[in-house]
Image (cartoon, rainbow, N blue to C red; front, side, top):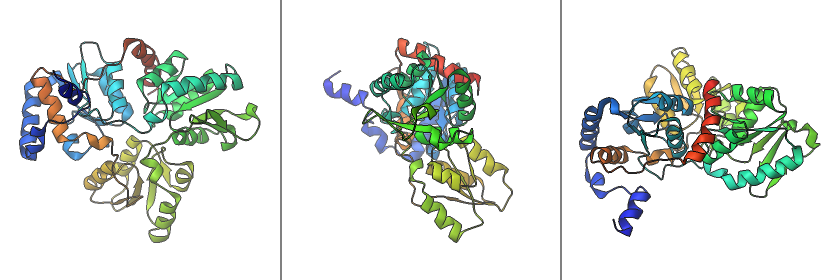
Length: 367
């Protein structure tokens, strides 16, 4: 294999033949390969994926649901239609003879990138100097395997937006303080719901290596990592104010990755799973503005024509990294299995996986 082939294979560059195929041709081939491999092939798809991908998913869900699905599948090949940290989680939770593939290696997560292991280890040393051995680290699953391992090694756990409340409550039974990585908004909204006032939350800035907090350090109960979701931060209080003035009868429900101010001004908030179930259970004719990723909002709109549903931010675009996974990349991944030349396999090092699974197991036990 020459250098160009190695580079192309390693960075997920799609062969040109897939760009020349029609959608009908690609769907036919995906259907054929799925039928050929049967139970040996499992395709999990996150709710934020495009319809052309979700159509072929064997299981759809949020991060927690897909982590659970990965843990229980016996399929040899798992083609994960999500982003990189999700595929890492699948590899950690599956057996060594199971192969996890990410159709496009460029499908990352900007939030996960906001906390690398070097920043986190530096922060931990400095925070120990400030607070002593009084902290337990929790990480949102939107984080690298190395960050999950960091938490597992120190007795902490992973969380999702579905079980964040349970996991933060659990953490406070173990230690006096919680370090919450890498999404400050989910951490802030969750802790506030559990009765921790904003005045008892500090923010760790990994760029300046400093704690952003005014007041007595003894009062700090939650240390929030200064990270965020680039999609959910785009829902604003101005969006809500405009909607309240133009459509006051609209119910507003948002994801807890939105800012604290947006969550407080909304009628309800919750995980992707909760948003979906809330709309499903809402009466016909009800009106909803949803503050979450656009692919999902559009799918909910299509599934509930009896309700008036809009995005809270009409100028919102889909999650760009999730959208790296498309039908051509899915087919490429499946044909690589068929041809015995696996592309884009996700493999987490054993020493990282061992610690990360300790953190993941605590989460799944509280799911």
